[in-house]
Image (cartoon, rainbow, N blue to C red; front, side, top):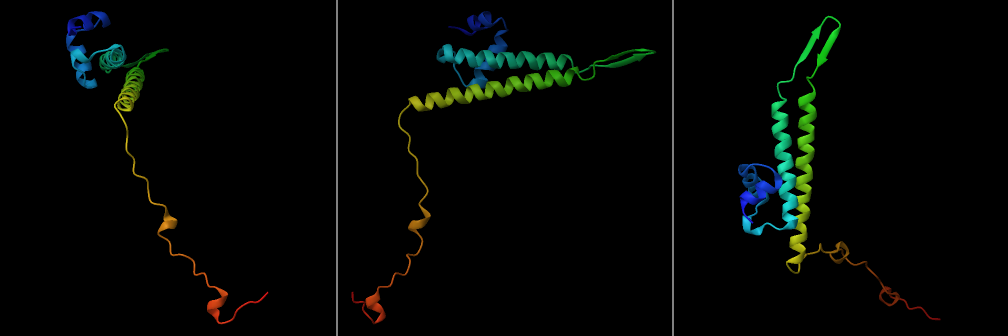
Length: 135
């Protein structure tokens, strides 16, 4: 699969596909069905970010009784593309976690139990006190 084929499949420019591949850390030869999902999420984020930058110059207008307020449109678009970015990051982390589980064993060091370092209780026997107990 080539970058041009991916761009045609997603309906975007080649430049944006290159950005998505770079952001995900993929080479074009590494693209699989699972990685296509990550590329698509990143392309959605780029598209939403572009739309938000187009809405940046929103306005507020009032003429007598009529009022038009579009000053919060950019903020809504910004929240949308940040949500898409967070969704992409979570999906990428899940993808990386699933790859690391398949690669082999893992090694973990556990913290030493605190009671192993504590001083033992002074246990005295009756015979050390100088008297013995008889039953």
